[in-house]
Image (cartoon, rainbow, N blue to C red; front, top):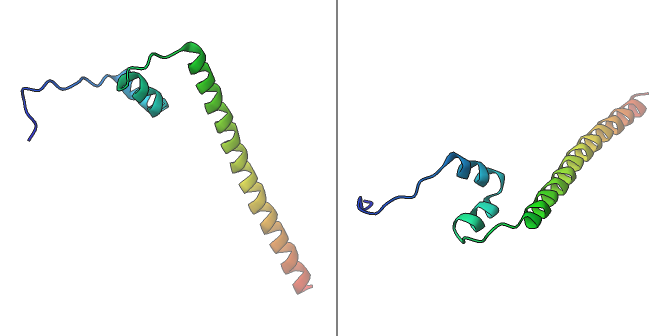
Length: 82
């Protein structure tokens, strides 16, 4: 059972938003008290954007691969039944 005399930290909505955006950045600033540098934030934002672009490209490549697979399967079926 938690001790009622120990003050509990407040969790603010902005903390939840920062944690949802980047849990590592939230942990560094809140738990480790590492001051955030604007250049580091910009680099992290750019890294997130590059990762997002790669993931989005991978999703489209997967869809293209599935489409080509089904086209090849239909073509093979057509050639067998001809």
